[in-house]
Image (cartoon, rainbow, N blue to C red):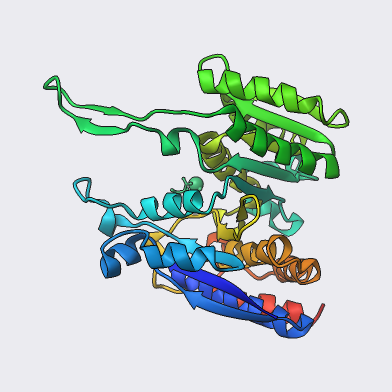
Length: 356
Ligand code: IPM
Ligand code: MG
């Protein structure tokens, strides 16, 4: 049976890193004997340019009918005009919401060989293995109503609202508990319960769900103290569950453990239906088109795609091992202080794949 993957290259370095991940997917599919068919669709700025909107209906339709979705990145200065009707990011938020992808998994596991690439002292990084479980379809990202540049009283005013229902919190928290039970059994729930009503509800729901998972140690931590603790004692964290915006911010912070934002993958999952896989980095317009972007975040996202959407654990592990071997063998793109191009790095991963 051929599995269908919708590819959303998007903007900036998105198309370059997606091409790299496809080469790796093709290599494992022939090695492990399964077939993949790709269909490219528009999203983000590229979709605004070609179709007049960041998330055309055809893209949503194709995604709904796919087995999985691989996304590059969206956004760029060309579409930054504050007066523009559409922003590329609306495409990304829209597809997350349209497919009900409420659970965003962001694993962070530093490579020993890259310890020097992190500004953190290497003894702090030993054994660090964190999984961020970020709520992805609620909170301030999807606040209603939203006014921008409201000038009712003569002065300018902007409003973003933050809303969560207990149901939205419960489903992500349950998933985080299940995952924590299979890992080291520790769950850190991050909120700002000393200030925000949504955070106080979040805390209550976490305590309710905790009763169903007695084997997991739960810790509530405020987001500001988490931001500090992450860099002072990253080894203290196992699974971190948090709301949409806190998860966005903390996962970028945690990228410093690994040495580059370009290395980190993510999976966005709902209840049934296709999952979406994308690197956590953005479209990096400053290096777009130069062929020097680090493809590893997207290659590892493809591994997550195989694991979570296609049930190909063996192929997923093969990719992850190949990336580790390439990095241990000294393969470095520019963000890691090396001089390999996107294609050069991809070839090193493909070579490692053949040799494992
Ligand atoms: C991410 C990105 C997106 C987000 C942007 C591009 C809308 O930063 O996936 O982390 O904030 O979710
Ligand atoms: Mg982000």
